Image (cartoon, rainbow, N blue to C red; front, side, top):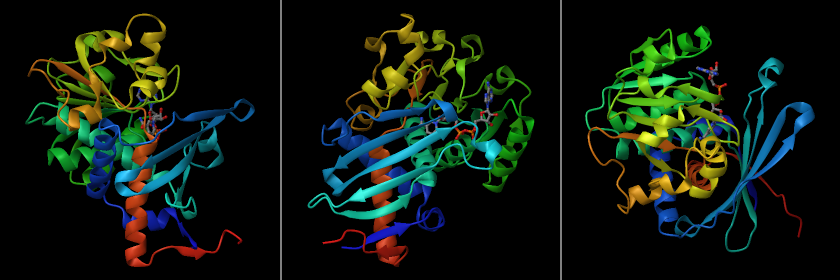
Amino acid sequence: MPVRIITGKDVESLLTMKDTIGAVEEAFRQKALGKVEMPPKVYVFIKEHAGDYRVMPAYMPSIDAAGVKVVNVHVKNRERGLPTVMATILLLKPETGEPIAVIDGTLITSMRTGAAGALAVREMARKGSGVVAFVGAGVQARFQLLGIKEVLGTFRARAYDVSSASSKSFAEFALKNGIKADIAQSVKECVSGADVIVTTTPATGPVVMREWVSDGAHINAIGADAPGKEELDPKILLDARVIVDDMEQATHSGEVNVPISKGIYKPSMISGELGDVLIGKVKGRGSEKEITVFDSTGLAIQDIATASAVLRRAEEKGVGILVDMVSR
Ligand SMILES: NC(=O)c1ccc[n+]([C@@H]2O[C@H](COP(=O)([O-])OP(=O)(O)OC[C@H]3O[C@@H](n4cnc5c(N)ncnc54)[C@H](O)[C@@H]3O)[C@@H](O)[C@H]2O)c1
């Protein structure tokens, strides 16, 4: 069987946020039902080049999809004119183990992260949430905006970034997608009174403080996805209902990882996983006044489910290049 090579441009033409949310919801539901195979992601550090890459395997029987994503984070890449994060996904045929597709996973990574954020907002934010604050206005912020738009319909956005150029281009992007965004001059101004707060910075210390967060707010904590990364004042976690994407991964590398390592927060304080909320096992929100936090680290099942949806579309539309890879 030939391998289908699907480029980033192909993915762009094949994948919608609506389809991604559907694929990612199925992935989280199957996880909650104990029906996925997903060993922990493996980090390989390349210290001399200020980079790392992560190897993320998963198998989802419900959609007959298996594969692995390899994704890097090289913080000096922007200076080199390259993206910081690039990903490649290899899909295998579960029945035989044959490689069936090599897909650019860069856009898929952003789309599936936006989709998880959207599901968390749908399940955890107060009904009628109308103001969404974005702290960090880079790539992930844009995909969070697109995902949240699918579940909230319209809303007013606010953005703060340490780079005013990033805030400005985020506001332009939002407007192109039908969302008006105001640029804030500080994190406090950005998040005060917001119904939903989205953090997508690479910070390694608290950026959003407890006293700035209103009762009833929901927070998508997206940026912390490796040991040592942290965006929220730990007091927020102590006052909130915290839902993670994966217990194991979040306690080691999610928003909760630093407070846990300092003994300020305990894994037993986490209310559950997003999949538990989606299958109705755990509540996403207990009251109108409660602060809720979704701690996202990014799971291989999100990538494999989304990549498999891309492959199905590519097969239907005859997109991609077929290569005979395996010699027999
Ligand atoms: N949870 C997940 O599944 C997931 C997926 C992808 C990326 N990430 C993480 O999300 C983070 C953002 O990724 P990205 O691709 O958007 O990067 P990016 O470089 O495109 O954007 C990050 C933005 O944050 C801004 N920033 C940095 N420090 C800030 C601060 N203290 N306050 C406000 N803004 C600040 C930067 O100026 C930049 O515009 C990274 O830490 C990445 O590892 C998480």
